[in-house]
Image (tube, rainbow, N blue to C red; front, side, top):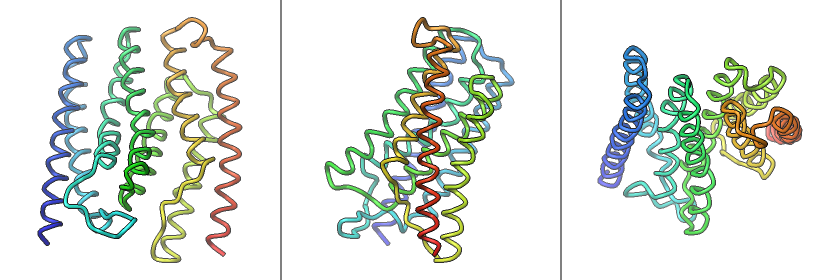
Length: 257
């Protein structure tokens, strides 16, 4: 009980800290680029609600905060978990910054912010493996954060005309195959292991890189933001997603048999 109480206190402290940090970061941009007052109210309302729901989710998953190597419960969050929670915490900020875009300089800051978010996706897993601190909850949060970031960004990019409809449909189909398949396994077997594969990680990485390049296109960066170059990158990423989709379909079929 003491372990879980100390863990829950650490989760609360981490969520509140990231809520304050995200609010501060957004506030700086809101002042510098003079975002609309009504838009700012929406951001802070959504961000507070989002972090509250994130806290409830983590508390509901408290029994999964253990090291996979020895099943020992964590007394407090480890560094990989904190990095993953930061990535989840950053989603509303990234979304509202992009929706506020009306200045090439803001676009540069959005690229930097997204790059930091995407780098944490590489760093948390690397640290967890290096120091043998892989946790059950870490696997869940890593998958959820990846797909949540991709899903929300894809919708915004489609509405903004940055990605073509075919790419959006392919990407969403891949995401729903993952979510739907895991849901069916959960209902059928009562539990589900958040397994990842090389192709799965490769497709996530390719999509995240493409999203950064799409913003380069938006702010018209020479060469790297060239429309023809971005189009080629979209097709390459689409091929990677398609191969990953086939692999995931085969994997889910075997698990359901």
